[in-house]
Image (cartoon, rainbow, N blue to C red):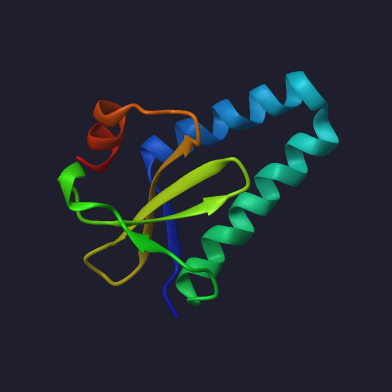
Length: 103
């Protein structure tokens, strides 16, 4: 079973998501959302979550899945583990941020 590693770009997004959710909906909801995110990361390693390949036009090798209002982007690391690369809100269309995080 593959383990998961939250990479720097994704860690920054998790902090942003937590702070936003805390401000808008409080600590209980913020903690529940982050816990749900981490539960979904673990499901990638066990293949209990359906992922799709990142479209070729993005020019990166990886996969993504939806968690609530976010797209979680990941790839296999050289040791076979799962690297959580970035997390984008469904309304974000920031190709450069996406490519930088996969860099």
